[in-house]
Length: 342
Image (cartoon, rainbow, N blue to C red; front, side):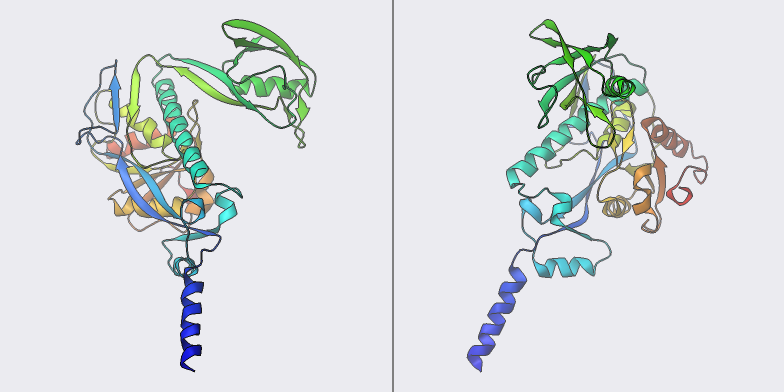
């Protein structure tokens, strides 16, 4: 009987420590994008006048346990299910099957770098400061109709004679052609090359060239964002607001404590993110009273807002900036768009 008891305890301990295919999310720390108190400011600008800023424009984070970055046990998962401040998801919803720790970390780092570049672009566009923007080929999909015609590093110049100033130009021309061949001019090694490519239907009635693209920017001054051990694209909105406040006179926040989250596109569009429940909790714990949330996350926001936190839904940088300015002027913010009115 004693031996059976020992074996049972041993099996119970083993079962409790065996990794399970789930991911647990919990609130992480917040970081004030306006912080200049340390040796290295979160946002530093050279080549353009900067202005001291009071208040907080906090970006929010989420701790992720499980997946390729580290295992989570069944005990940890059950505990998270019972804790309303945490969320549990099947691992495959967060990480594609087979993703390694190195791949996950690299993807997170690339997403952070991209979000920072997009934040600079969107902030400059918001302030009507000119900058250069080009589309560059960054790989081809399997079975791409552009194989043998477009190479990594090619810069897009024109499509059917129209200057390519953004991805939207390409998408609209492909939609209008409905599968008809297009003439794409790319710049390669300083030379302009014209290629005729027949788009293919991606299966949902949308015509594509099968090219992965990224933006290449030329900014009139340097913006450096320093934030260790934080990855992913979700800080883009708060970076953009922090840049706007840094390079313009006065205090955008009026000394108020504001937090938020959301991806940012070069044109200022704010996109949805993961872990918004935890980010709202982290924002409130950090002292924020106003939270900027992507409109596309409203379904997750409703019913999960911490007491003492007002959540404003935003679709773009201009809306976010207006909301912050309204709060800064001590005007009534009750009329700002909310997820309750979604």
